Length: 145
Image (cartoon, rainbow, N blue to C red):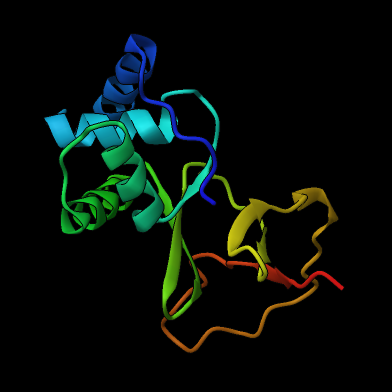
C-alpha cells in the first residue's frame, strides 16, 4: 500500500500549490490534485503511479493513468520527487529527497525508509573513465521469515 492519501482539505491543496511553485511548475488542476495527495499532509511517502491513480479516483478526481505517470515524471525532472526502482516492473516515487536507503517488503510490495545512520558503504568500484558517481541507490529487500 502507498500510505494514506488525503487531499480533502484546503490546507492540503495550498501545500500542494506551494510545492509546485517551489519548482516553478504551473499549478494545473491535475498537478494540484496529485501534489495535494503526495504532500498535502506534510508527510513523506513512497507512492506508485497506480496507487496515486486509485487515490485520485477515490477523491473524485478525473485523471488518466498515463497523466499520472507523465506528471510524476515531470515532478521528478523538476526535482520534487525521486524515483526508486525496485525491479523492472515497479517504481516508487519518493517525496523525501535526501540520499537514504530503503527497505522493500517483498510480501506486501511496500517501500519504506531504512535508517541511514546504520548504512555503511566502505568502498565503491571506480567509475569508468570520463564519468563520476551521481548517486548510489540502496534498496534492501526483506522477506518475512
